[in-house]
Image 1 (cartoon, rainbow, N blue to C red):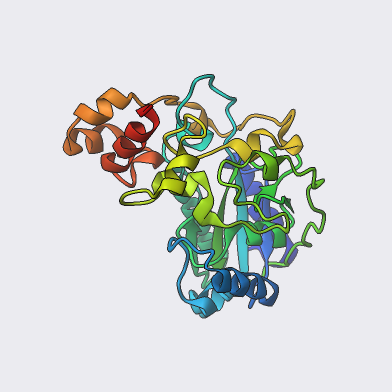
Image 2: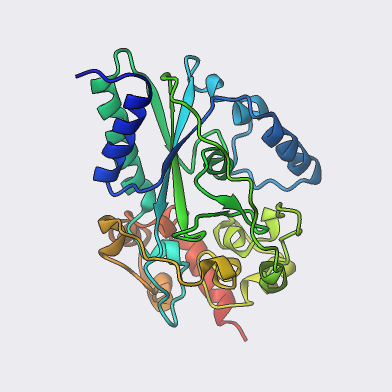
Length: 304
């Protein structure tokens, strides 16, 4: 049966629920001129990591990735499974690589819609897409903005991954959530790199999470930031102190609750071969930079 209009949006949400996707919304295709102004200021300040889409226009308009684009489906994937005492990994890295799991679910959504919408076309992204996923989640009404740049969901806090599907069907956009966090400032005070500006933007180059993934030698300032707590991969400080993350629910997504790893053995990082590392950890998000970066981080934290 072919569904159209709002009925199709209802069927989309119902199908997402079968994949344990509780929060799904729709953003328009762009261009997102308000985000363009924000991104322009980030570029002018030099607050870019190189991980982002380099083409400015493609960053603010989905139609430059899919010319027929008429809407963007946005999904939240909560990942909080609790806090492991003594862990040396960020909470998101406890799990099997979320890119694999989310891409599989987004593809399932896309294929479902292809079966139910004549001529349906789509492109699915998680992390490595051209658009800013946190901005899209805000536009799709899935959460509100925090001073630390995170999107905050009422039920799952800021511990959420975001995936999106650029597509050629005119799903009705949802209303953005125009609220903000309560601006208590705890994230600003606690940030190891003091990278949070207080006006809903950050300098990602001073974010410990970025520094743990950066290639090459770290300078003195980066080394000091890395050593402010014991995580060798990622950083959860701004989320851990956020009042909006108190009493949040743990993820209902089954794939995020299995085969968890809370610690990496730094002795192993110094002894294991690159081939052995890839074989053992290839399905982990902390492995994408390879063993060398993790070994470097371990050595820095073990000094003094």
